[in-house]
Image (cartoon, rainbow, N blue to C red):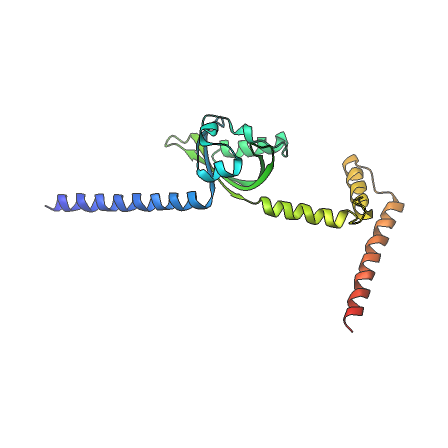
Amino acid sequence: MADSTNAHAKRTTLSSIHSEMEFIRYAIDSAAIVAMTDVRGTITFVNSKFCEISGYSQEELIGSNHRMLHSGMHDVAFFRAMYRRIANGKVWHGEICNRRKDGTHYWVDTTIVPHITAKGKVDSYTAIRFDITARHEAEAMLRRIVSVDSLTGIPNRRRFQEHLESVLNISGCPLPPSISRCSTLIRLRRSTTRSATTSATSF
C-alpha cells in the first residue's frame, strides 16, 4: 500500500514539474525570438516570432544554416570569438545585426545557451533573442542629428573632427597640434555657448 502511495505521489510530482516546464516554455515562446541549431549551425527549431521578424517561413528555416541571416555588419573575429565561447559550453550574450528575407536589417539582444550532454559534450545551441531594432534606429538618427547640418545635409565640423581623429588613431599618427587646438576651441566654444544660454534663460 505504501509503495503504491509513493508511486502515485512521484507521478503527481513529475506531472507537476512537466506542467511547469511547459508553462515556462510557453512564456518564453510568447515573449522572445527562439531558435535551436546543431553544432554546425543548422537550424533545427524556430518559433513563430523568429519567422515573423526574419520574414522566412518555418519550412525555409529548418534545415538551413544560420549563416543565411548574416548581415555583414560583424567581422569574422566577432563570430569566431562567439563560437569559441559556446563551443566550450559557455553562455554567450551580445547584440547581433541579422538580415531579413527582404534584405533589410534588424538588431537582436541575443543569449546563446549550449546544451551539454551527460558526457560533457555540446550537441546543440538554443538562442533566445529580443528585438532591439528600434533602439538602434533611434541611436543612428541621433548620431545623424548631431553630425549633419540640418539645412544642407552635409557633415558638420563635429563630424569632420571625429572622422579625422578616427583616421589618425587607426593610422597610429598623433593628432597635429593645430587640429588638437581646433578641437579644444570647438569644445570650449560649445561649452561657453551652453553656459550663456543657460544664464540667459535663467532670468
